[in-house]
Length: 360
Image (cartoon, rainbow, N blue to C red; front, side):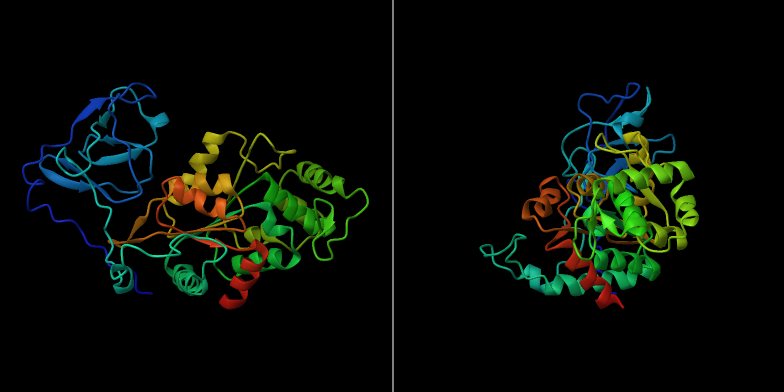
């Protein structure tokens, strides 16, 4: 796959030449100086010892600490320690020693020729997605072998027999390196494996099963009794679904807890900051992120993921996709600052089945 070329900034002219070194002030224990600088999704450079240095492994809304070796390090505010040298100042045009390189990738001929006034520039139910699908296929085929693909799934992905099967097949075919979800996705996937229902409704016929509202609770209880998801699947000789595919292929997953959870399952991380730390380990490596039908989890992941990453010394885009039948949900991540996200307004079951068939 041919990625857009990264265009590195030149610092050989003003205001960069005469710009001062970046300013820092000491942090407190878990809090920042008042004029702290906050990071973005774009490549950022800091002038340190007269040299412009690029921030690595970035994420938005964080502080920048200059370590003892003069290296800028993106740091969540809750992680700063008393005395850390935190970058301060709110200008990012280079004049204060900080430069945000927003237009870092070469523009395509098509995008550069667009007029300033145009219709249908947002993501809605009227948007054409054919070319977006083709790009997604290309990204996934490339990143299956040369990248790190993260999926963020809501429970709707396993409420349908065919979409649940499609997602499991995508995992087995190598199109998933890590999965983020909550207690619900895993619970209802395991409920489907045991009862063939999602919240008591048959995932193929949609028939409501008598006392089906007990199914997910009964499933959680059995998993807790078994001690783990893997033990539960083995004990009950179950071989279908998303969680089985992840375990079979030895792919990591992060199940983040919430106040809504029943149970929860043993693998669910109840502490939100521990869950965020676990997710962050994977978003640091992500080259493509696909978020399906889970608004809050999508925003959380998007806010941890920059618009770029470095592979073998080359800067390339990180492709982020938000997929939901609600226009509001699709556009929410863009509104929260993740401006590089691509949205699909579509039924999530149809999306997964369509995607799996075209990648077969």
